[in-house]
Length: 417
Image (cartoon, rainbow, N blue to C red; front, side, top):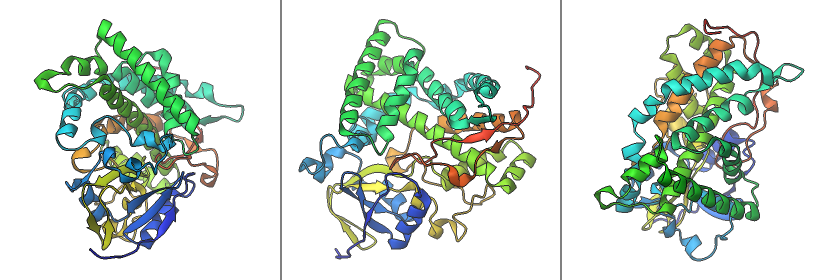
């Protein structure tokens, strides 16, 4: 193998200039060496085609037990970002173990189950939109993230999984602790312990009184065909669903709304188009402003070479979705432009290969209900601040803004009102 030495780059944990950073990473080359908070190093592959190939490469897996730096004790046990990597679910296993852990989920978290949620999702959206004006401050400004994009997907995924309503606020806080870049070691350890206790309590509740929810359904099929998930594996599987199903949908709804409000030409196309136009808004948002900026982590099971760079067995590879989804080599010179008419809307926002995200159908449905309903109900919706004043979510992983202040304008009332 060659001895090409890639550049070393410190990744900004604030996410303040996500796409500027992504562009600089691409300029440095298709493979760079990244330093994450805590001085933990990982590779980053910034070329779309190369990263897509890696996602499908059987020599590159997701099992964190193959991470050499972790085995050697070079990654602290209390490193806060470890909770996104050291999991006991299908996302963090390969081969037969991956299929064993994914099977109960694929048998229960089906497209049909998701589609059955549509009436309930529409009901939740209608109620939240009607309630938005009462959240306006004296200046008439409403934080659309806090009062719409944030609680909506959390309610949907918690109802789907069967989490008691009284727990929802605390679950939001626990998830925020996991994704924040400034989480302390003490907060990380406390969060891990509390979420474990919560899930064990939930499992006991569902064993005593099964319900029509995903947790009960997964427990019912667990053990069939000889494949059994331990409670820890079931916990990490459902925790992954809540975290991914909540945070991804928040960012998708916020990012799409912000994109349309800052691109009036594209909003005009939406208003003049048919219902299918909204699916193009969703896909272009997933490409142009992916809800997950970077996603951990993959580990080669043997030495590999990527674009002339040797990546040794057991070294970690971070997937920079923000960088590859605007790769000019894939999307052309206008890759940085938000364009819902773009011919090529394929992207890697949900990953690829055998570990592709299992929840795109739910995320797309939530956005397909929440976005058109928002702009239909409030046709004069507009940003209440200069876009430059919006603050990024301080995270290596999550890509969005901490708030989305808007002025609703007069509502367009439906016959139900």
